[in-house]
Length: 630
Image 1: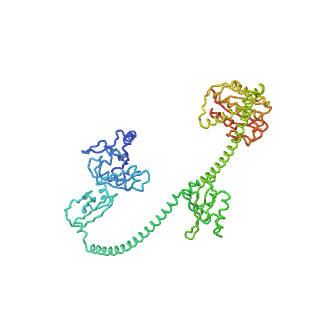
Image 2 (image 1 turned 30 degrees about the vertical axis):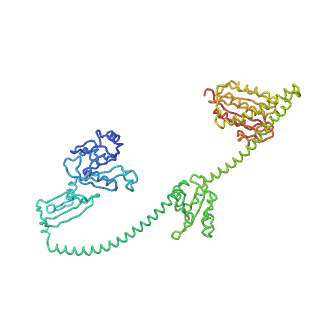
């Protein structure tokens, strides 16, 4: 392009650089193949020097051709008032803008030139604020004024010996500036001759062209025919001008009316579109055949479809059965009979998203007529959260009722569990209050054993309640140690062996020489609860404690051959205050806290506990504890 158009002196790219980016920008340009690059400005004598500090710079980043213009590389255009004025006007208007005549940094001939700026933005540029925020830089054309005008004169084939030419720029607040002048060699400054004037807007600047002929040229052309042609031409021109003026005036009125009406319609459409597009709820319009005509952004978000995937298709694509098949019937029945199922009424239905998932919604459909065509407008409210809240409320009500029943059952059970040992203790005390009526020694020993057993039972109940309270308060601290599992299991089994013998049940320890990391007191409590619970429900059977090493854990199981647990009760076996409601459970007694406490103690150690049971065959409780090496 530069070779073809000799009047273009150079093409440039001017990059916007914020002060905070200056050092990194200069380093990047130098690393990219321009060693010594820096952002510069002119000093008072016109010499280039590093640019002073400014909030932002617009240095020349790219130049073509480079060799003859290399001195201008890095020159900050905002350092010169004339360049800065044109640059800011182009930035704010978004249009091509020419500068006033300037002298180029790289030009030693002192020829006046102009720069034409074309702004480039990195984002929206609809208003002034957006244009200033998203400006990236400018493409700049550099032109020598003399080269432009002489090239134009040469191509126009003017009679340069008999015509003078003068071009000046009209400035609003300062004197006109002469841009170019041409005088024939025989020019005698005579005012005689024909003169032609023309104004031209050049990228925001106004130039006046003046051309004047010499007297010799005028004399050579003056003939009667010329004057007649001139006069006739003037008359015809005047008539045509009057007609054209009338025609143009009428066209202007029509155009103005059309423009105003178009603007009003566009504004109305824009307002309506803004209301629909910004609506929080999905809005869908469809014709009398159920074909979707519009699908707003809220509907896109609710259903997962883009508008162009739905518009033109039947709205029943958004419905599962039975609504999918029945929808067209609703429309046709309503149009034929006025019988409304949804239209004009609204109801709760189920919708289907693009991924096939369903969600509940409130659907209200209204009817309108546009140019005789029936349109239905559907407004949708996703009520998923409302349904979830209603379900959560129902669940909470059921849980509260269940908790209330459990509390009542627990109070009744505790009153029974506490009353039984207290009755024993209080029943024996009157017999021991009077020395003269003291029963025989053998009977006293039996009474003492019963009182101790009742006291132990009361203590066990109280300890269970205290442990549960500590666990729920998060104040039960563990003191883990490395323990030999077989020793702890033997100790627990020896302690419970007498009770097992009363039930005719045999106890076995098959834990081998495995070690665990656990709190010794709480490990004994876990095993006592599980083995003691197994003894309660096993008559004439076997209870075995086993263990095996897993990766990073020790798995311990307590298996019995007792009555087992119904499958329906297994999910709730570890709940607080929960007991399987059977006669054998009531007979065995207990608070219903043992397994809940056991589960909490296992989890405090970082383990898990599970149960596998079959009625009539027995149960296996399995829990894990950390390996000592972990």
